[in-house]
Image 1 (cartoon, helix red, strand yellow):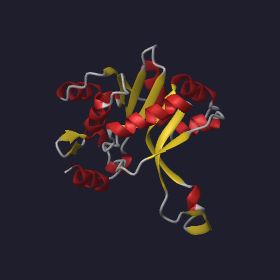
Image 2: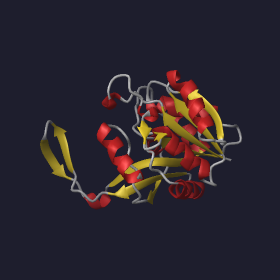
Image 3: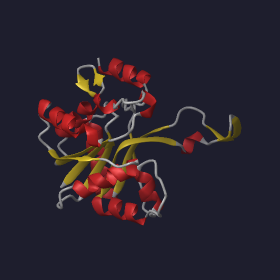
Image 4: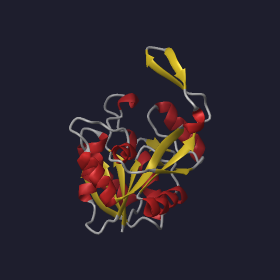
Length: 223
């Protein structure tokens, strides 16, 4: 069984105080509904666990019902950090789950095809993520705005979600994290455990909604 964990429990600080970007209107649906529908339509996904802010549990149930998301297994409250929310999602998975897919609910442009490809790769390799090659020149800055060096962009990828793993691989990676260590994505936890992560290249639009401008851009892409 493959379970998707959609994480939508962030504070949305760059959107402004009191704003939950997961429930902002995007064309004709809440932001999080777009991701839910993509996973609902993907044949590689058996169940969905949705992780949200505690104060949005009731609203999430209404969204799931309104858009007919039949694969929902549980809706659970998230934690303080992203990795805490992912762990809450892992704990909510069905015991038969063998593979798990983590996706940011703030990436509404994800497609069922991309999800399926990442899942298939993880089933072969234990850990996979979607990403795209860097085309811009990238500078490393250690302090302020002074350039320290120019990176070799041929070796650099911009990594996104979905990210898929064998359940045991991801659980063990998070359990092995030293206290106080914060990771920015699930692949980083797996990398720190010594496991190999494969990248599935995709050039499909897959932006993350963090600002009002991102929301406007996503709306233009969906029209």
